[in-house]
Length: 469
Ligand code: HEM
Ligand code: 2DC
Image (cartoon, rainbow, N blue to C red; front, top):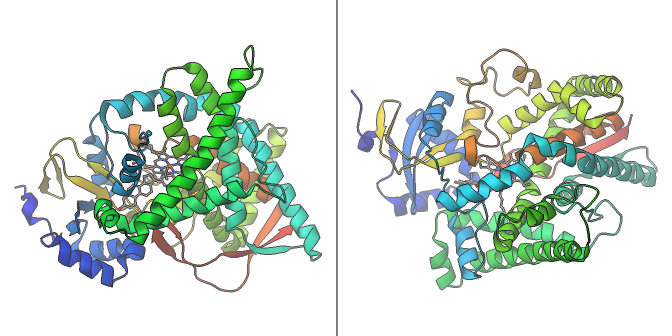
């Protein structure tokens, strides 16, 4: 017999009391740890209400499969009210990230062709390869200048620039020049605004932004300032391409980038294009750079594994005579490493859907319309799901051990990450160039953990040493 919704274990009766306890536990920065603890206390399903945020949480891949089968034709994630409130406040259109229903679907279908289809990879790869080569040249120069045959540093700022340069090159078909010594202060400001935007979002998951706005709270003002900076910079980039396109005569000889392709295609309104291109530009910085930083950290901790990956890359280079697209087909272990990084250090602590139909999970009835969350971070560390989960083992993704609903770092289905192909390719190309050129080492014995600032981030600087091969 199926048990009713009201019997799901957990703390869901007093949202305000739970918010107070959550705040006492510094939950705004510890969400991932609190979720782990809740699964330990309540088992593989629990119900929760913090402030006005109500959800049912699950951890098993088999249950994730049930959840995604019930997502319906218009899959809907948790509504991040801070983000929609800003758009409403400034009268800006929602892009694909924030739209829902038929409008989301029709925009997404058109964007899919230009952004995530496999066909576009042949256009993206040369652009991303150039950025990768420039990054390596920049590191060589830093090493030379140090006069020590090595460079020891916190790479995060360099990686933010690499990620912004990469995503901009495919969006605009042009380079911003962030791999140079002197960079546009506006670009640096854009990067800082994205970090601030994420950081100020998390408290507003639990306290309604409309309330914070009314009382003039600092977190809301900072959030507005951050998005203003993001939109201003994106608007400048977009205007620039728009102007060039109107002056140009005849069709371009080379791939002009995602934005120009969308404008020429003329299937979305200019306002819709602007909204989604801004989201792509903002979504493409912290996500890939932090994942790459974690990957370098893991490779520094596992020198033997690092050599195995290097050997794979060297062999792939030889077999493909340097053709990057061919090379990308010959690096399964590098791809496994990226999956392994996202298993232990996912960007998104959870995946969520408002389910479109009633479902039964762990023998509990869950009614349509409920927000159901898969604890992605918790699943990646669960010994019932992954054999020896604490070990960083890229080869687990090559073996026949089941991968059923286990590789979900980019989400799932038609609402999965739109930037997935760009992110994967950009990260693979980065690792190829880095492994070919440098050995990565770690300084002292420092355990780095995650902190939650809407996305999961390292809780302290990761200091690495790069030495030329
Ligand atoms: C959505 C992860 C990089 C743009 C998402 C989602 C996840 C995710 C988990 C939600 C998917 C779902 O609900 O099923 C990641 C990870 C990245 C990454 C792990 C890198 C390691 C990027 C990049 C871009 C981007 C580079 C832009 C170029 C987006 C957009 C959405 C999204 C626009 C919303 C799509 C929609 O609602 O239709 N991402 N992402 N992401 N991501 Fe990413
Ligand atoms: C954060 O409880 C924790 O890819 C919440 O590139 C539930 C939640 C909802 C939406 C998730 C968010 C979490 C983490 C960050 C995600 C976001 C959807 C898209 C966004 C996963 C898990 C991200 C980082 C996008 C951001 C693009 C944007 C800034 C323009």
